[in-house]
Image (cartoon, rainbow, N blue to C red; front, side, top):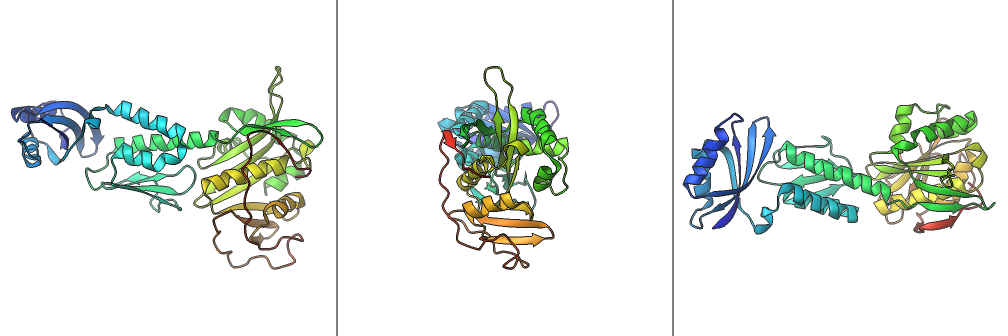
Length: 384
């Protein structure tokens, strides 16, 4: 006996599947497992069968067609195919939790794909699938293109692949370590990834910020709407870090600073807001260092920071730590590009700010290496 995989489209009405299985039974084919994929063209039935050794692929196709199946595809299978799909998917999910960087290989295994390639830019047509191609977003930026010549992809397979992508994104957001930040004055803050439940505390923090502080972070000069804050807490590609006080001995946590990294393609945009009472104490510098470390691990080419020209503190932090490679001015707003180690940013667009229009010391230089951020307790710089 020989293991085969058979996939065929069957009219999605009562009785048609039994006709197909009866036709296979007449050739001595034993059906071991069956999965049904609902599509617009009908029910796509995926069988794992045990067939007599003398039967060929052409014999199986003929049996399927006699059973009113169409668009038949057959291929030899191995014993691993006996594992049921839920068990297989759970095993791959477990692997992905242990190694989020293995998303591409995990997708290839899940879909039995011919190839999986990563591209730095999102697919022009967006996520989706055709008969031979599947496009999926990479949680860390860019996209995956999955190719399989046969059988054609189904909506159910796309949903399974998207579930793995979502899992990889959730895991990636959690690998940013929680640390205790020790400030120069001896105060301590916890720095951790944000979660959706932090929304009330984040709104309260914005309410405590002065209009001037809000203007430095948001060009419109006001706290963003709740829907935008909710998106910032869990970006589709990137990470949000919070600096919080309390959280022990029954004292509720209070958010005092938030830092965002939102990726698009090979670039990642950073944003930073520190509550008035915690400014110039090293909190912003520490959060920015961790965002840069995360972006470097994720392989982004450069960071973008949109900073009002009068936000001297933020400009000094970026200049002192990373020396922006290009600065572009749009009215009162500056866009700073910080190339990351091992990658080069795209050439600066026309209209790059001429010398003398940015704070002293901001000059185009090569990127500097980013040291990994340690786990546990860390000290903050005396400014930022």
